[in-house]
Length: 435
Image (cartoon, rainbow, N blue to C red; front, side, top):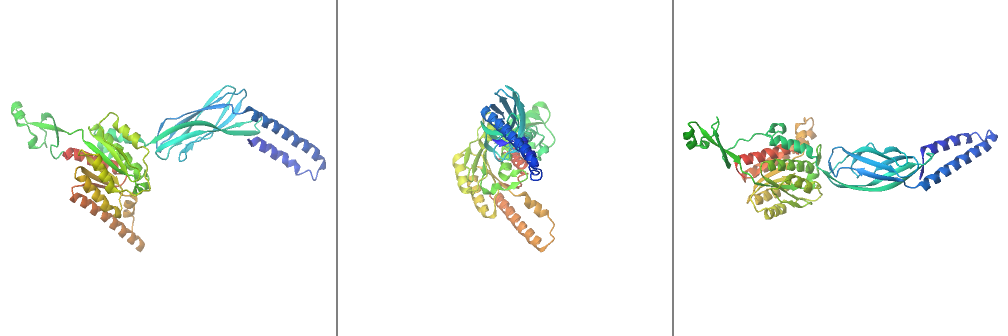
């Protein structure tokens, strides 16, 4: 129970005449009566509010799944079960790390009446969170006191990656409007697929694709058309170690990598392939690839709470684990962000995987490196910094050449460029028939 602004203002007004009492003695008696009257009224109002007790029932309406970094609406419904009019302020106990707008909310509830009000929350990270309750503040009948208590109102929500952008990109990919997200058309280098149909010869078709028997029968050139093989497996190895904690404009490297993985899983699903995920680096989780309805939604539900840890990623142990778990030849995509001291381990892990699988190493670099490379050199210290940056980038390029020497595909991209790079690489592999 705390004094309301009206009581504080009344006390301030009553205190002003007290300053004149030493000079005007006859004011002492009326001032004392005024103080006693105010105290009596405040005391009666206090006991009226104390006797009334909590007369409010609350209900919160919120979606059980929320997109990260996107605004979501929350509705608070309050009902007055008492016999008097209530002036109420509500403050929802939303999870730490959320941003909220339009709180607290104010309502005036007549006897037996209900009211609704909305506010907006913006989750800042993925995972499971709980709205524990609601703080309620009610004014006394004369608005001299405010009583506060907490009403239990528990709701658990799950915050997912913002799949709306991922879905938009995947729809572009499925509808072949790939240029909208930087994805290229990949020309098939060989057959590398299953026979689909016969069609008339088109300029640019390879001679070996011409079906001479059909050509003789119809009297015009007929080509064989192939479609990409289906029912292939993709396995993403996602590093959740300390290297992936780096923050950029779109969130942490892990957040952006997970969004890119879900995008490619969605595209692969429409291509008839199955995708699975193995996470390592302090957050080990195995989701095997399966061709089932809603497979990508299952991946989303099983990975939405993955976060980068402070542990060091053990690439060799992770590669050995994936080799044991995934016996079928698959496309294995290792997504990490390595440093110079990690490169030998990354190479050995990729070689271990390459004994059975086709391996792609997606090594994320910080976008600040590209920014620093374009920055003008105006001082000796700047020249030293630029030379150190070139040395670091040259080491990364040398690792890429070493991967290529061993027949391992690699991508050296920023997190922002990862979605298009992954889908391009996947479509190129599908078109070449290497998988």
